[in-house]
Length: 210
Image (cartoon, rainbow, N blue to C red):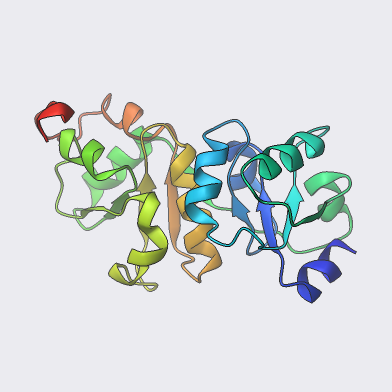
């Protein structure tokens, strides 16, 4: 029924579980915005149509909370949620997808082995200017404007995506994946963990001076 309604109503499948659960297994073309992060602001920034039909994939016993929090920011067209969650979807033999997710340390090792990695930093422009990885393949693609700036990257390329802590990078990866970018790698823990590696980091600039 969930699959049928999604197709008939052209509904957005919104997965509000944790980023760790989403990268392991999710419904194809679903978008991740987890309840445990900046849920309402990112829903408002990335789902532009308040009347967009929405179907939810939620953690156990979190469906009512998800519907309520969507309604509070004007999204009243939630059609339903997946009974039994992602486990029920898998048990029914439906297709699932995943996103490769690696540690900051693993990324550092990959960069040591090759100098030709594409890295997408999806933090805000001010965060990026304040401090970022100082490598040739690094590109700032802020999550706030990812839908407008998607043409700046190539579907044929592989991109390693990070934010500050790991939440926004999975949102970005889910959006890109739904638009046909299949060669994506999420960096767990984001820039907070990347700073602890030996990768080159730009000199800190106080955000208030930018």
